View 1: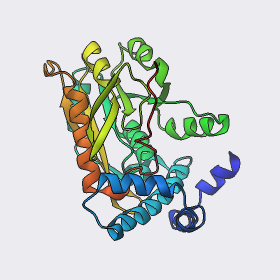
View 2: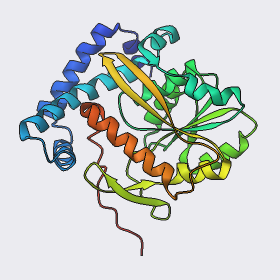
View 3: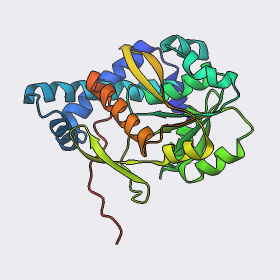
View 4: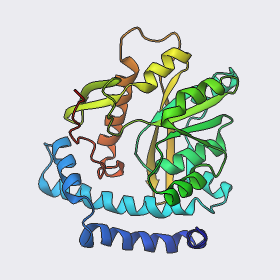
Length: 282
């Protein structure tokens, strides 16, 4: 951990040289998850040529290298510098609920630098932030991510206990942050829809919790302005009194994630095996 903190103190121009090396390793040496990335891209964008697919793949590898060094930099970056690099475009959209003493659910995706999204929002917004996460198998990396994600006050909440924590924090004005675009193995609360040109299952937990606790749901998107600089945008999906249509919140979330991906395809996490077949329990 000490070595990582020392590396994180290097200036950005040095760290981005490391990122360039990471790109070369991922792209040409390790060929990191290349088969999964190509399959995901080809299925999601059947209208694109192989050259266009290859270009997105290569740019994704570059973006992934940047995410690695930027996330490492979070260990020591001054709060003021982070907030210069991550601009909250329309914080009034979410802060209106804080003024009302209303907790909210923030649903986001693996777009842009989602780690910086969390720490910058926990720094710049007045809410208490609970970040729902899934515990890692490695105790070292689990501890590392706790330090990074909690650097500016966010509290990490294990996915299995998230609803219980929301009940316990009912007297506080909280953002419960959920990155909800990954593969779900939960067939009991699985919502099937079309996403990126293919049938996809999404976890409907955020919607069920929102309806039960009567909390507004916002989609929080992130896009890169230039290397090392991002914008965060807040968009209300639904709020009390909610739409009566079943799965409305989940479907709106899915559509907003897809729109963000299609606008900036190189900035989504294509290396995740999102469409892996999961056998339903008998």
